[in-house]
Length: 542
Ligand SMILES: *[C@@H]1O[C@H](CO)[C@@H](O)[C@H](O)[C@H]1NC(C)=O
Ligand SMILES: *[C@@H]1O[C@H](CO)[C@@H](O)[C@H](O)[C@H]1NC(C)=O
Ligand SMILES: *[C@@H]1O[C@H](CO)[C@@H](O)[C@H](O)[C@H]1NC(C)=O
Ligand SMILES: *[C@@H]1O[C@H](CO)[C@@H](O)[C@H](O)[C@H]1NC(C)=O
Ligand SMILES: *[C@@H]1O[C@H](CO)[C@@H](O)[C@H](O)[C@H]1NC(C)=O
Ligand SMILES: *[C@@H]1O[C@H](CO)[C@@H](O)[C@H](O)[C@H]1NC(C)=O
Ligand SMILES: *[C@@H]1O[C@H](CO)[C@@H](O)[C@H](O)[C@H]1NC(C)=O
Ligand SMILES: *[C@@H]1O[C@H](CO)[C@@H](O)[C@H](O)[C@H]1NC(C)=O
Ligand SMILES: *[C@@H]1O[C@H](CO)[C@@H](O)[C@H](O)[C@H]1NC(C)=O
Image (cartoon, rainbow, N blue to C red; front, side):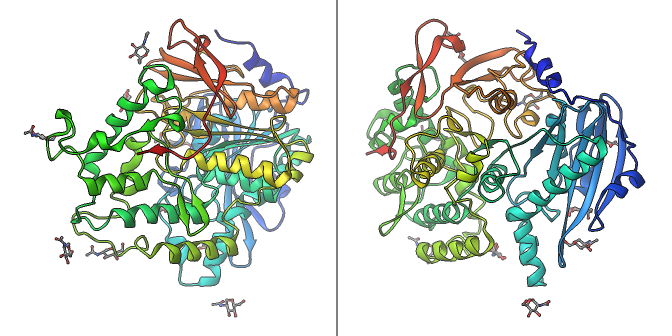
């Protein structure tokens, strides 16, 4: 199975060379401009590790099993009131590529772990702390006493710090190796996906290829959509309120009705958009299965349920698409208890504002700081040869997978083209939650942004046993950019936890096509072909 392509990818660029520079603070500082300063410069030997532990609030874990490299941590000034830091791994045997990784949520920190995964391919690996030090759910840095400094920090987080990290790193690499970066890539998920879209829109010269996972590109509308759902469900003592304890029951009924509707009863909802879901099945007393009053829904609760699966419009304005059927296992973090403390019935957070008011407020904030990546005309990125590989899990309970379909559509509209297939493709991954994981053993692993560290073993390189561009998004992206071979499909893998035994593999197809079972072993990827079409439209519920 082990392909020689992986080795080829490591070596195929003529610039692959041994580090010719001195991995020391004085040497690196001498190459940096006055506005930047190296804080750490450390030689890492083959199979070594690096990290900052708890000093890095967002990414305390070490990158492990590293190739021999020079680990660098730099602070740079982004405005008179703000600064950011970035981490850079510069391998001894460098392949000429720069691979930047992104961040998650509102977190601030150098993502050493994802950098480690990128460095395993022989690339120089970069991550910015985005201008603050905080864990992913911590937003306090945006509300500091000095409002001017806070505003600068938001700008750094929104787009500036990563861009400046890339500009400084490209120059540093060029000076250190005495050879420029041949190809620049980015790969990340969620906020990292937003960062990828932001780069393609605002700084098209930053990247030749971007791997974009489940991007939270439309923050203003996404938070408004959450608010709409939470408000609709409240208060907790209302007849229409659905407690989180009933979510698993709802998920099971969705699986029961939708699994077979995609043509194969295999425990995976392959096409949630085509499932016709009857909420009445869950009505208390409708069937013997739902006759236990603590394990069924009343008429009012069915109304709440239908609302969750409805696209959000504010008057005529389309605000945000609904989640897809099959994402119920991830509803808990979305609706409960992050936005509602059921024990105190505390609803006095910002969630709970009247919906149209919050929407306008959110739009104002995101517009003034350029947080939303909604400048859909990607002509500049496309014209300089940029390639985009965009994916989204169909069981994502944080950001609707249809928000990615919306993005893809908007790009075509903004650029006035029928297809973007020669440079931008979107892939939907059945059964995958937000960025990674599947509660139903659906194949999701494609070595995408932040995926490697979700496996049980630290320091995983590529897709173990399948280190080739058919299975690995990183290698697929490199081949698309450097050999102009578009990604026709990518085979996702589900491993048996704790082993490298394969549970199932399945091709993931470019939107709007989907994998169809052709017969044979349902868990083998070659039993499936990208010959079907997804239904494109709102969730069908009655
Ligand atoms: C992380 O790596 C550093 C070396 O960079 C080492 O000193 C430290 O002990 C490691 N931490 C853990 C938890 O292994
Ligand atoms: C980053 O934040 C963590 C958690 O608040 C803190 O322990 C750590 O000291 C901070 N790191 C730096 C470099 O200030
Ligand atoms: C960098 O910014 C932080 C606040 O985000 C501040 O505490 C620190 O003093 C600044 N450091 C420098 C060298 O400007
Ligand atoms: C913040 O910026 C405004 C406008 O530039 C300025 O008038 C004000 O003095 C600044 N406040 C502080 C605390 O620096
Ligand atoms: C629900 O709780 C609120 C206060 O938390 C109370 O005012 C209201 O009467 C309660 N409604 C019902 C139907 O119990
Ligand atoms: C009703 O369902 C709950 C939760 O599933 C269970 O604990 C309880 O025993 C059931 N009651 C009856 C009468 O079946
Ligand atoms: C309710 O939530 C708000 C905002 O999170 C918090 O400030 C307040 O202390 C909470 N109140 C109670 C009674 O828990
Ligand atoms: C996988 O196995 C590890 C131990 O090897 C365990 O800690 C982890 O919880 C398991 N994950 C799942 C999803 O079962
Ligand atoms: C396919 O994989 C699933 C999940 O492990 C398993 O339950 C099922 O039995 C497998 N089917 C076949 C035909 O091997």
